[in-house]
Length: 523
Image (cartoon, rainbow, N blue to C red; front, side, top):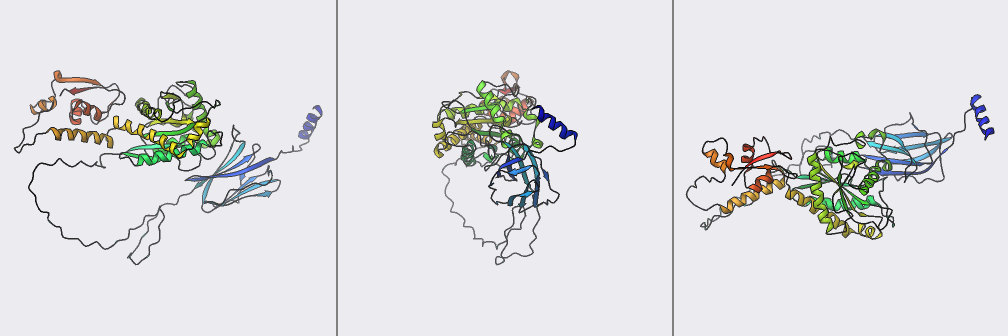
């Protein structure tokens, strides 16, 4: 040992370079996402790399002076935007040459080893989207073929001759026997909006998630359930469904939240997972919400361990250093509105009720922990563990299309029931409540031919007709806003109009806060 140290000292003293240990390239893989393509080189250790000055926007050359191939390497297939990928000898090292079908912007970084992968060199190819252009067409006729225009290009629609207008036939008038009930009013899309539900299929791409005894990857199960849930939500009036990922590719946790909140303006965020445990007997579904007491706090040891494991997805899947976010490690109590968490807990209980009728439950309450993927203020967020993929029986269930559909239906029914019970202001569900109130008034109104006298159906109306600016205090009750309440639901419950509630309480809109006290007239 002393002899070796002396040799090293002599080499340093004489200016001789120390021999550099070669790094083995063991595999090259690729993943395709909607806005980028990822190439991953599996390595035996950290490697030196640099982008060659000979690179162009459609050809990237990455020099790896200390790398070598450990035997034959299977290279990724040429799938757009990749034209070809190959490794070639360059001096004592290797050179990675990437040809693309369109211009890309590279982002290159290394990832340290973790429990699933060795050292990795990641090359993200970010697509350059061309600016939209307007196509001008001078004359378009039926006989003129029109070339298909890309989605980014605005095209002029083909004008066709108008259909001949048939003369209207006046219907034969019939004697009126009774006054028909008014047809159901259709929702006014300019006033009422859909509730947007973002469905997040956990893991993906480089991050397979938990792996069952039969080799089932959690990322595939979660995407299958997410697609079933998306179809059910889209078929229900008043709900709009979006997916954070639509294929097998990796998305960092922070980006999943951003896609939901800022790209799709989501009201509800549901992340779907399938858990794993060392104990193969562990089983059952669970529902989780965010804990506002810090990343290390949770309602149970199980919830804390699960959050820690799920939060490591960025290390496994490969989130670049540049995309890191300090908020993943900070306490977010000052960022998340308490009302959003209260509503998340209410909705979580509705989903647990539905899951309990389908499968066993690992926990019969909504657990809370510091899940990074749930830390987005302004939207209700839940994480649903659909079962334990490490349990052989539950693994069989989770790969069953029928069971996946039933799990999706349980989540769907929980979301739907919550929105029906606690309709958000200005939503389709609030409009439904409003229409039920109108039907009640129509059904009870007497059918008389003479002009009816004004109906004084509330102390507020009587006070206004008498010229008073407010109703008598003796005919008022005071109501304290509880979690899950909104002005529409309170008005419907007490059979009072929204206009009366706003006027009596000096409200500028339908916004109310938990703990606020309202004056409500007694019918």
